[in-house]
Image 1 (tube, rainbow, N blue to C red):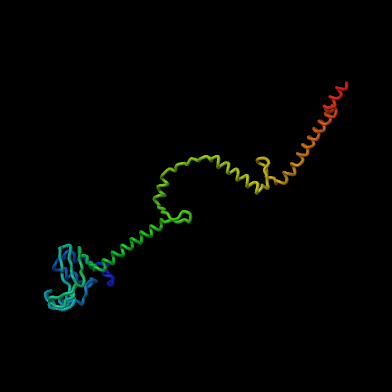
Image 2 (cartoon, rainbow, N blue to C red):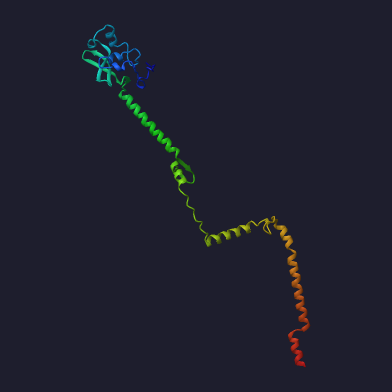
Length: 248
């Protein structure tokens, strides 16, 4: 025998292994009336008949709760009904119990079956929604999309095809050059790297170093102009030469 919670009879079972070899239609009610059986009500008429050593036929003449053998399929299946007798011809069924291979269970009523099925269905639907929500992703720029784990595994297995880098077009290159030139004019650089590998130098410093170069160029230009003037003055203008030749 085992200890059971009598407040939840639909979720328990009871068995006495010593009765299983001798269990039949004649002894099944005695087996059901064991004191350790949580499904048995000791205040029933069966207990009164048993104490007075009467036959079960006397139950029809009594009023109250009683147990009867409703169906028997020896030696595997027995069904016992608990009912409220109001008269010899009027009874109200209260509960059914089935015995399979010596183990006693209470048959659930229709309300309990519907309640259990509904709870099972709701639990399955809720689990499906929870799992679906775990795959849902959202980004302000992309919106909503589904991200499944099997897609990640497929992406890992598939070899990634290398994308060919397309060269830029002439329009893109010219447009970029124009934008860079415009930015350089608006925001001139403050540092310049004269040679690769050297440290950048401020632009003001490079301008100061570059100032003597144009002066030397100007002095050379002045010297060349002076030499040209001297040669012209020594030879004289072409008009005067023509006059001298006529006078001669």
